[in-house]
Image (cartoon, rainbow, N blue to C red; front, side):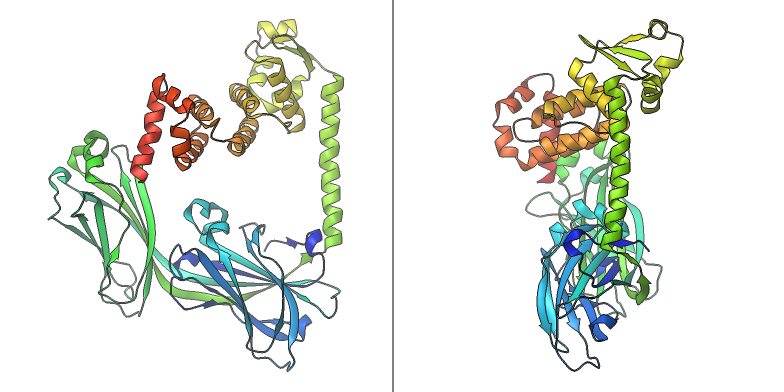
Length: 498
C-alpha cells in the first residue's frame, strides 16, 4: 500500500478512509447505492460509518457520494469536519471537495455531488484512474478536540467483469441495404451470464451504421455491460470508435448503440475502409458479474505533516543544490573542455555532461571528426538564444519562461540532438500555450516533426474552436499553401466526429 501524506492545509490530525472501487464503471444500477464495508473510527467514540456512491446512468454528469453514520454504541450526536477527494493510482488528489462541518445523528447521512468530468470518469481522462479503479478518500476531523495522531484505513470493492473481444466481418458490404440485417451472438464463458445478440442495420432516414444489442434469458435481474466498437481499416488501424454502457433490466430491452459512421463515408474510400468489400468491426465487451469483494484491507501509516515537511525540505534542498551547482558550472565554464559555436556566440561546455544527455553529442565527441580535433563544434542550425536554452536544460533540467515560438525552436533543437526529455517538456508547454492565434502554426510544426501526440492535441483544439479558427486568415492560408492536405485531414476529422 502507498503512504499518504498530509499537506500544510490539512495538517490537523484526523482519520482517513481510502476506498478503492475496481471496475467502477460497471456499477450502472439506477437508484441503487454501492456501499463500502462498515468501518469503525476509534477516535470518534468508536462510531461506525459507511461511504457509498450512486450513479444514475453511464456517463451521467454527476456522481453522488454519501457518508453515513451507522448504528453504534455511542448514543450522542457527533459533530465532525470531513472532506471528500478523488485520488489517482498513486494516491495523489485529482479533485478535492470543500470541507463540510456536520452534526451526525445515528443513521444520518451527508451527501456530496461530484462532477464526473472533473474526477476522471469520462473516457478522455480515464488514464488518470489506474486499471479502471476509482479511489475515493474521505478525511474526518473532530471539532471538539484535536487528536495527537492520524490514522488511515483501506477498503476495497471489486466488481467482477467478464471481458471478450472479437472481429465482426461484414462481407459484401457495398450491397448492404437498409432492409437487410446482420446478426451475431456473443456467448460468455460464465453460464450464469446471458448471451449478447448484436444486430447491424442501416438507419432508415440516413445511412448511419446502426447496432442494436439485446440480451438472452438471464438468471440475474439486471446485467450491466460496457462495449467498445471500432471500425478498422485495411491496415488494421482504428478509423473511428465509440464506447457506451447499458443496464439490461429485462430480456426484451434493446440497447441502441451510438451511431459510428455512415455507409457513404465508408464507400468513399473502399480500398482503405472496405478491403475486398468487407467491413471489419472490432468489438470489445465487458459484462458485470456482480460484486466479488467488499472488504476492509487494513491500516497503514501516515507520515505526519512535520515529518513530511522535513522530507520535502531535504529533497528540495538536495535537488536545488545540485541544479544550482550545475548551473554555476555552466555559467563559470569551470573545467570546460569543448566549445560550441552558434551563429554569433561561443559556449564553453563540458563533454561528459553533454554526452550523458545527448546521443548526438556523444557520437560527435567520440568519433574521429574535424570538430573533435579542433576542440570547437560549429552549430550553424541553432541560433544563439535556442542553443543557450538547450544547454541550460542539459545542465539544470529546467527551461526558462519562454514564449511559444521559442518553444518551437527549442523543440526542434531537442529533436535534432535527441534530448527526449526536453522534447516532452516542450510538447507539454506548447499544449499549455495553444490559442486560436497560434494553433495553425503549432499544427504545421507538429506535422513536420511527426509528433502524433502534439498533432492530435492541436487538431482536437481546432475542432473545439472550429468557428473561430476556420474563419481566421491563418486557416485560409493553411488551405491555400502546401499544407492544404493537413487542413483537409483536420476537416475530415470534424466530419467523422459529427
